[in-house]
Every structure is written in structure tokens, then in C-alpha cells.
Length: 128
Image (cartoon, rainbow, N blue to C red; front, side):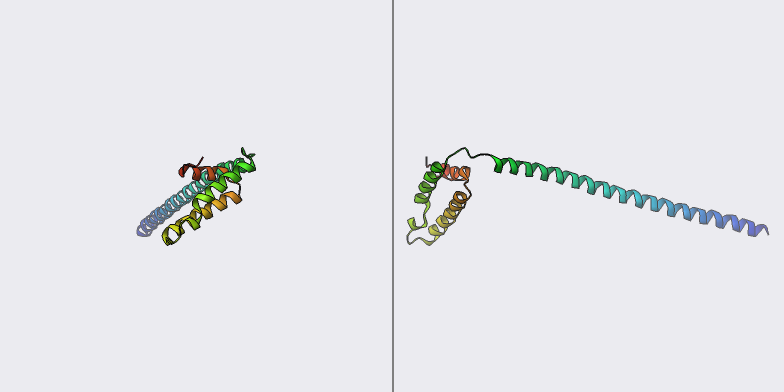
């Protein structure tokens, strides 16, 4: 009879210990899960702040009134077009390809009225 009592106590200690170990393991897994969630949320918040800052910069850039007139833009475009037109490279295929790329960029900037981009190219080419 005492053996059954001792065995019962031993089993209850063993089972209680196992239950405690399972509880500790599940608690640790829960804490790791919560930490992952916190990291994901903080990363999301950081990315959201970066995106909002970028969006504000874009809004400010495109809402600005141009600090140039259409005549200045056209004059600069024509100067660059004369300098970088692909017809200037007759016979030289490699140079013609390069000038075509540059001219397409100039045309794109002129179409969207990007004076700063045209001024940057003009500065590189020493065109006033």
C-alpha cells in the first residue's frame, strides 16, 4: 500500500513537472511570438514614417510654382537639342546611340517641364 502511495506521489511529481515544463515552453514561445510581432510593428511604423516623409517631399516638389518661364525652358531645350541631336554623329554608330539616349532624356525633361534637369545637363555640357 505504501508503495502505491509513493508511486502515486512520484507520478504526480513527474506529471506536475512535465506540465510545468510544457507551461514554461509555451510561455517562452508566446514571448518570442510577441517579440516578433513587436519587431514587425516597429518596422512597419518606421517604413510608414519614411514613406510619409517621401510623399510630403514629392507633394512639395510638384506643388511648387515654376521659378522660370516657358521662354527660358524652350531656349535651353533648343540649345541642348542642337548640341546633342543624333544627326551630329553621322557614321559613328556608338556615338549616335549615346546621343539618342541623351536626347531622349532631354525630350522627357522638356515634356514634363523639368527645368532643373535641363539645367543639370546644360551645366555638364558648359552651355549657358
